[in-house]
Length: 235
Image (cartoon, one colour):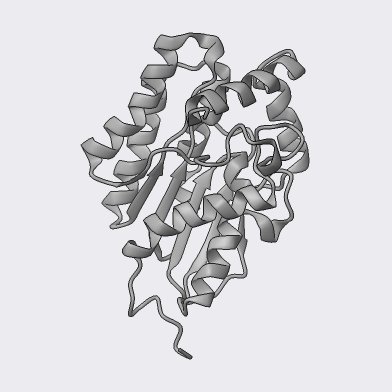
């Protein structure tokens, strides 16, 4: 059985070969077809859960209701929680881009931040130390506001060498330990490299793949929820 790292390597290698220029063509296609950050069915007085990420969060190639943040909101409602879910995913975004829009993404009564960034840093071969610094700043600023953080890990493509891939992977584990935040080691666990769970580009999850990711995020999220303030008054 292929490991998750090998599966992702196959998926990313296939994508890079088909695009010619790894990252750039992907970014332009994503930006052209995915809306800017949106929020799902706002509720004025509800506490918020914000998903700050790239195309994997935005739901590239999916209907709005199939994105992971939308699936999480449906799960919350099914369980009687009244949190508002904000999809602050922007296709093509790097860790630097996410940091640059952090303040307005955290507008309102934000209780939890799900941080999914770094895939585009890896596709472009950007310096790992810069990515770590950007993600650390996001975490630090969110926690200074009393916001709980879920950090999700990502894997780098193999074309920049084994040393880069290893260092890239290690960043997430170090950040989770240094900042003592909830950690999901690999956002695409159980989905990467499996054709039946991804759209035609082989890299972004389809509806079924998104449901697998949602279940993984839910397991990390549920213990962080306020079981009183976040419950629907009608329950």
